[in-house]
Length: 445
Image (tube, rainbow, N blue to C red; front, side, top):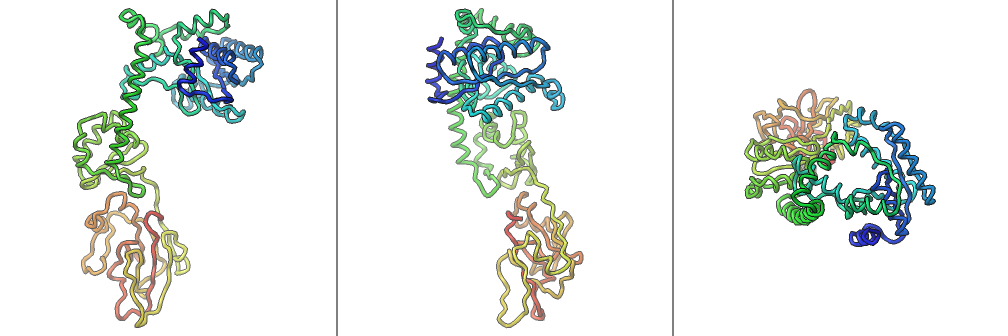
């Protein structure tokens, strides 16, 4: 088994020369065999043990066994005790999830603090098959059928090649002591149900079912790589990046509209789950402005396109300037100056600069987010217009609309900042003094 262990490490490029490994050892047969194989292979390791304090004195005996093993083999030993039940309760998660969160967070702390390169977990081939079947039972995409990877970040799984039977044989031949968690023999947990009730039935059909399913997981892994390549290429072709907004033309999605897998994989990075694919379809045929909120993004229908943005930020602005000096300090404004009107004076033409009749402006002035119901008289128009309608006419998308601010004086909107001034505050032939305000780009508000 030692040669298989070393071959698996080399074949999967798990450990480089002179790297130090932190071995996660529970005291169970898998982790004790893994630690012994590391020692026989001459690989530098330290031992990390978590006492989850879930089984009273039994948990303490696990810790004592691992500590004794470490001392006998002159290996660094790290241990910690967790109040797992309380952590699970406080975070509203299962005991199993709590134990997982606690141990991997601690392993990473120990790894960094003590100069280890990798953390080794003792998952074996049977664990891999069980994970695949659990995912299949609960419902999964292709990725869920690939099983565990030999490595993920700083975590390596050098025993994934070994069946539970081969581990038991190695343990017996080398007379290794280990402790059996009695909860593993029951059928309370899903994994144990798969292990003790389902796999034996499969084994009656195929005595080598674990090997067969593990090979199948490998093929799914290869199919998943093909899918990843296809989705990445498709995303590059369909999704356009514009500042912080992603844009997809709806017509480019139509060929894939009823392929759940492709729709799911395309939108998965933006928080869509398998249960909400139908929301995307509804969005495509919905009204402009309709949206789907995920846990991480907002997906919006905007005429003939889909926009993907981050979740709306609470960027409420309500800056009040009592005088010109205070207005110059307003964050959304790049510069504020006043000028006497002369024959040589020229009104700036760019939309991000407002040239206003200073004599008609009353302080204090306010810079704030526009609200539904706000109206102004766009420059050159004698009729008032709601800002919401103005922005629709200008074909701004919902995320773009949300960035607009207004400059207000005495209850009147002076300027839709960076877009258009109010006709009532324009410079006329009789204007003696102008207020010139340059806005920052809306992305910098």
